Image 1 (spheres, one colour):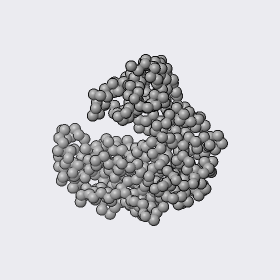
Image 2 (cartoon, rainbow, N blue to C red):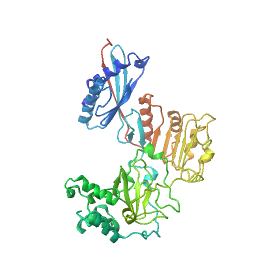
Image 3 (cartoon, helix red, strand yellow):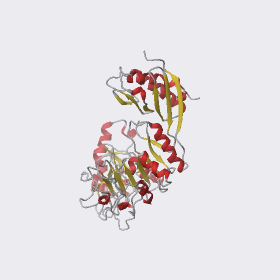
Image 4 (cartoon, helix red, strand yellow):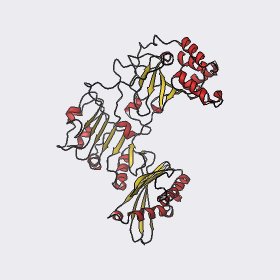
Length: 464
């Protein structure tokens, strides 16, 4: 038996939890839940629940017993080859303790360091709609009139006379690795400098001269990569509720995508990625330069119409297109602070409907039943007049409901079979065990691997 599943492995942590909660009214009459992971953990301590794997905290000395106890469990995780485990403890001041361990398994995402299951992935390897979308063809796309590979190369050679450039063989190797032909401007850039640290002899100033000349921190030729959708991963729950839906207007310079096989990343600017765009929008140019924000999962902003325009005159960043005031949102929030009705949210381009805190009568989903692009529905408890109306939403791929509404759908065998993933909306302080049971019932409908539960029992001795 793995040490992870031995009561003695968890005993020090249970002692810490019990000692810090004996003065809390009713704390030991219920449950205490948390999660231990390889990068972070959460335990229900009076001074907070989050603690990094490095044990950094202002009161580190006071929390040493907690940290040591967690490290003991982490050692067992490492031996078992596991990334994390959730736990639910029930302890008595007299000594008996019951500990339930939850292994989410391959079909359930973990969100942060909390003990509750995240999204249930009902179809193996499935990703949300925006992550499946490819760029639209733009037959009339052309290079910017300002694009001039020869002028670009000449300018850079003047700025970087001692730089070591890439050979034609190295450029060909990069093209073979990426599976795409490098545009002439990008090849002109790397013919001047291949941006290898060893070429600069560990000289930081040499690296800065290249960055100043190009306008960003240049990736080496070996580091070039395609910014496709897979390069911008996101957990299902967040991706399904993405605040900006994939959208490309007829006059857009950059296609509003998660990623594209034509986005070749060659630079970095404070964590944002700089790319050459070979799949521009209807209003853009082939080979334009775009920026992919580290804080966003969808879309990119236009920087310059070409590498020549980026490098020669200096650059001024232009942000991504924003939705016009009269443009109906593809992601709608119906709640006490947002839209006042489902009718107000309904329009043919609606993709995501979130029904939040609501003080009026429960809402009907009738206005959105026939919408062709609706892919995500999230509803807070008590907001739906009839949860069975969900069965009429024939294009849903993600659904998040409270346990009561899930119960209605499951009992009526009315869960939409189009779902790719699902979420169970509960407060953070609920008992994870009933949530895990419900999650397994949903997973079973899709023949997906279930969460596993192991119960350990032991005695901590009486509280002294």
